[in-house]
Length: 357
Image (cartoon, rainbow, N blue to C red; front, side, top):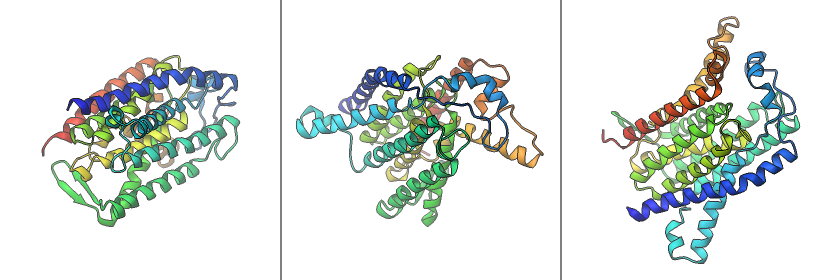
């Protein structure tokens, strides 16, 4: 137990230290080359205007750098590969800290990198003001295409290579989806990815994702998936380094290079902690990641309401966290309350995941 705790906690601390070290270097680059949007958005996802959003965030949108998510994924990559290399070169103690394994962490690690790079392309295009959407960057269709391809490949790997087609549901037991496991897997990843729109207030996304990955680190640890627990903990350490510089006033935004990497990886981790180890990782995902789900749902509800009710809105502005700002909540209050809800949901989700029923 002791060595397993060290294997999970120490790499997380290392990722935090790496993140704290590289952030000043990244910050200097982002500000020197003005890596922020050159114009504010004027069209929302449903085709309407964005006057409320611009009244709240227009000034920061064109003066705060994007691509802060680089801190997260670079810290994770450096920590993971450094421990792997030390284990293979020096062995000994370092072998006990190496968590990069084919059966638990290789898939989420590779997908984490791929999602980060696709998101980075989107951020670069958005900063330049080129691409397929209203303010530059990859269009939503193109981003969903990449997410869909990733999801399809991984879902087929789970189904055909790992022979996984079952999802464990509390009180119901094992539910065999058969071949429908593949579209179910893709839908779950899509919905989690859509929760990336929670990135929009200083410190909000970082705190929420830190709670979520901490929960899955705990679930994996108690299910004896020590390598996966270590990987999730390393992600948490990297997020905390990012969060150190993202609390108000944020030095930079996480943006797509961070949110795409985290959301897609989260979905895969949920499946890794499910029927493969007789766990309930997928079933508790809507609870642990409730802030992401409710954020996505608020956007869907808003769009449907405007289309089906002749332009009438449910919220002053979507996503939901911006609605709270619009009704008068200070940004820091929205962030802190989201953090509280995230922690409560994470604890509750871990309890349900580990309960025997």
